[in-house]
Image 1 (spheres, rainbow, N blue to C red):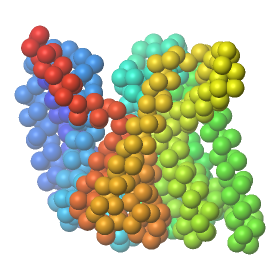
Image 2: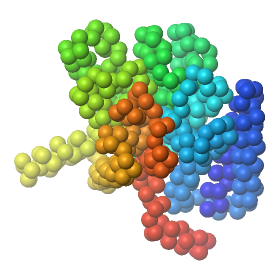
Image 3: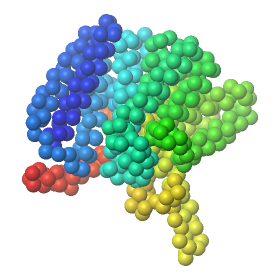
Image 4: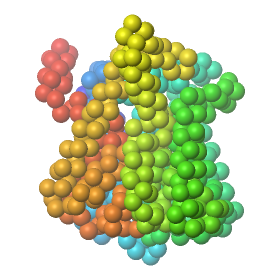
Length: 478
């Protein structure tokens, strides 16, 4: 338990250092970020000192607590400078949780005139959240067997990358790929016409698939087709498994079933919606392709950028984007959502069940990457979808109790769980934001974003009496 406290203290110190850096870069908000750095850093230092001498080892139960507490505390720390700047507690926590979970939902308007220190901080939160979830998805969720994630260990460091001899080297390689792609993205944006500041901050929120922008018009502020196609590419790169990049670099092996499935699915959806938009709205084919490709990739990768209000395309588009909200990118990427690997396995499970009904004596084996998928993995995947659907329903009903219409309640619940950003409807759609919602609704959505980023089960385990009884027994045995 003390190790959990110690790590949380280090996280606070790290955030304090970033606040201090922000204060040094931009003088107009230096006071706000300086005070925030002092407060957060002091608390972190005290936690570290109080727990540094009593480490007795990290057990699996502690890992659940560590994962959840670090993400929640990171959001609280991220909210401190926003609160000191001018935001209410509810708005500050909402914005920070949306940032650190790379959701991209915002309560802020007037972004074009917002101090650049605040814009940079929002982008930094998403950059940290993106790489943080890569580490969580590769290193922790497979160990905790969350939602069938143990299958992903075949694509990660302990089995798939023998060239990288330990977890530290694999983490270092992951960080290098992440930062390298982010630097390349910033360079391409700058060459394409963005200012240096816009290029850096948007590169942070593109590779992290977060979607925060420094402009009220989101990425639609940049009308350049080159920039929009560049964003499509880098959003997609952020949604691919980072273990896949490393395997390609060290073993020249780029085969991945979930990557293939995601690319083919995106191609089919983009092609179909482009034809539909051209035939129904009379849009120029090349313009339609760019608009559809940008917004579909943005939603599926859970980035949440927007270049247009796609809900104005008609009921078909509204229904399509609502469904796409739940899809998500690849496992082991910065994306949220249910993930391509789970959808792939779920589809194969459905096909296998149909075959069994048709031929009861037939033995059907579900495989992934040429290997048989164990029953416990499939059980985890199916359980994840059941819990995901139940949680979505509970959140949507709860939001509707606070007076939200069905479209806003349902899309708000789904966009929070999937960590996408914009919902549908006039209030929280791509042309709106979440500012007009009541504080209780914002806190519910904060919880939804938190649940979605940690893939539900990691948090729900902490809400069971059995977990705390086992924690108590563990403490007594020690």
